[in-house]
Length: 142
Ligand SMILES: [Zn+2]
Image 1: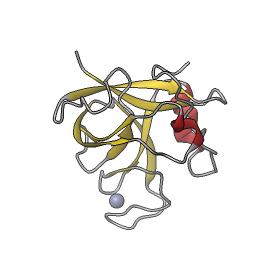
Image 2 (image 1 turned 60 degrees about the vertical axis):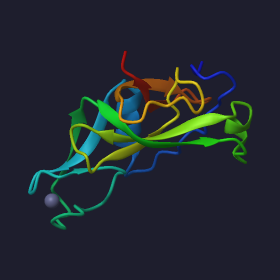
Image 3 (image 1 turned 180 degrees about the vertical axis):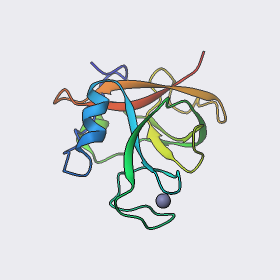
Image 4 (image 1 turned 90 degrees about the vertical axis):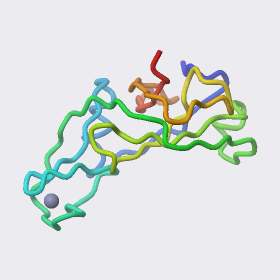
């Protein structure tokens, strides 16, 4: 069950490139591709390093997932069915502390719509979709 009443997040459809990421989520771990040539982290999953261009140097690396809220918006009229019954709903841009170049979108479970503390630290949690696939989510640190 999602911590946000009424929310049914659309389940991702893993492909060859994204399957390691989603499998790790199901084990409650957040992994990102790390380029062993230049140490740059990547999200979303990619085929080659965006910094040095190397193609066979990307390895999956577990990260802690702590971050900060960069900016947010509130969706009141989403056409995505799983979000409609949970509206209004927060969408916050999370900047990862381990690499400020990495951003995720979060619905911020536990934070009332619009009452988002911009700049606040957030912790990684995992929330289910209706297929059972877990998704990374973030919660304001208390
Ligand atoms: Zn690289």
